[in-house]
Amino acid sequence: MICPDSFKGSLQSFEASQAIGSGLEKASTSFTIIEKPLADGGEGTVESIVRATGGQIIEKEVSGPLGEKVKAKMGLLPDGTCVIELAQAAGLPQVPPQKRNPRFTTTYGVGELLKEAILRKCPRIVLGIGGSATCDGGTGALQALGMRFKDAEGRELQGIGDNLPKIHSIDQSAFLKAEGIEILIACDVENPLYGPQGASYVYAPQKGASPEDVQYLDQGLKHWARLIHQETGISVDNLKGAGAAGGIGAALHAFLGARIVKGIELIAQLVGLEEAIKDADLVISGEGKFDQQTLFGKVIHGVMKYCQKFGKPLIVLAGKIEWEQLSQELPEGILAAFSIASGPISEQEAMQKASFLLEKVAFNLGRILCLGRENNEKNTF
Image (cartoon, rainbow, N blue to C red; front, side):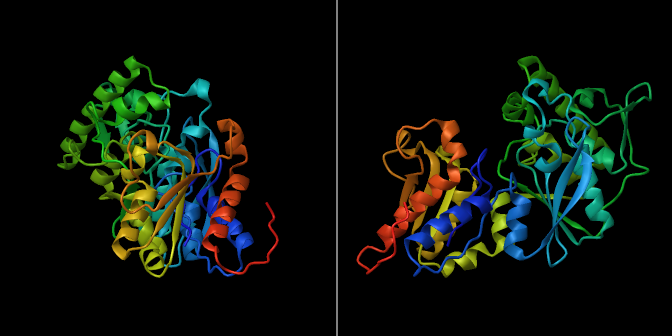
């Protein structure tokens, strides 16, 4: 059973899955291969779930993180569930490096996608919030749903991080409710909304924020938390995961009743991962970089827990392995880990050739698995 995460910057999870499957098939036609490409709420979430469930993808033009028009994919599953990726409308790769500053980016386009799902009367919405370029506390998304923010002089404010400290009042008169709709936020971190471990201090520097910007945004998020409590009676100060994606989880939890859940656990449920692992003889997963962070709610960690539950061997294929620098042994539950890099090679070249390299390692792994069998198939590598 093949269930990798994306190899960020080079392969989406379904492309990685196809490469591994192709390598195994070239090694031997005797394998029965099941592919379930995965994600944890970030890049590739829509594609992974739609491919695994037989759903369909639709495109909608929405506002990007800087207000420009972008085309974003949404997934509609057979049971009516709508799957949305924040990164499709507010992703960091959509912002040129020289323009990156989370004080001036918005989740407005994410709100437009949510609005589409609500108007379609989807019974459940799954929102993956990985890979954001934003730190607007979700105000952009709320604005797209009809909420209005005003400063002390009554002037309307755009939903961006820069305006968080300026919000004096909130107008919900035209806000689109999501009554009767279950909203689940797929998230792989537990950071709070503000403070030393919050959205601004931990993630804003990666999105282009200076030390001064970080302090400004943190104060803005703290002010926003007070306003949320004042408006709804709901405290988001200690909400786990509220600090992910610039704080959008806090806003959607308070105003739409959204629940923040572990991304890999939710997606595993949607694609039937547990049953597939239970029936497998061997499980192969992978990601771009296999290191200590892998065990903090990411895809491989989720896969590993199911493998441990059913006593199944797990092999990890990765672009870069840094585990041996951190520990003498692999985590319990992982049989082996292999880098796909073949000899001295730059990271850029490895990323460009990722599909070929992954297929080649899978081929060699397949040959080892077939050791002792009669196999006259031609060696194609």
